[in-house]
Length: 201
Image 1 (cartoon, rainbow, N blue to C red):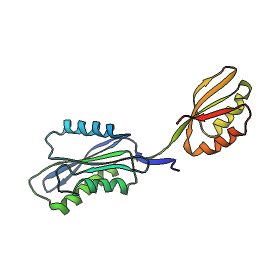
Image 2: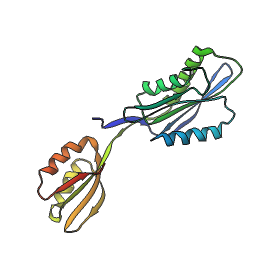
Image 3: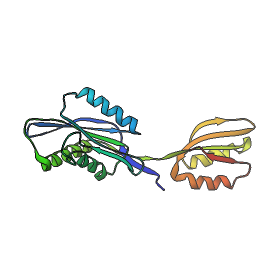
Image 4: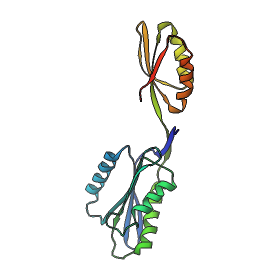
């Protein structure tokens, strides 16, 4: 089971590479879904309406299973794929990587394009901070009032963050914790009397 994935911490923009008069400008954005991807691309079209090509690739999903590469009018496979391959090489997901080209009058040929788009994408990712995000889950536990110290000690042990605590005769706690601890905390809670729990994901 996957408990974490690598992504970038913050957007990186305007990473410039010049090649034979053409300007290649790299952008990288952390994204959660395809709606985020569309928003970022739309903003770039607004900022760079005169650019010759907006080539990009993105990976979504814990294992990058949802992905796309777009050449935006460049010869097939000469732009989107080299950009996508850099996402693979850096082992990151939930990232949109865009390279915008301003044509400078000299053709680079397919191999020249592949090389330059790859280099631009790599430079952009090299400027990013890559972080590991651990997956979290939300746990809801109901228990008797006199068991609260016991419960708090247990939640503390697994670095759980209390989101909500309701003290009635029957207390309820909602807490977020890392998915990696799910099995162990379930085991401990199952051994306790008068305790009911559920994961809300």
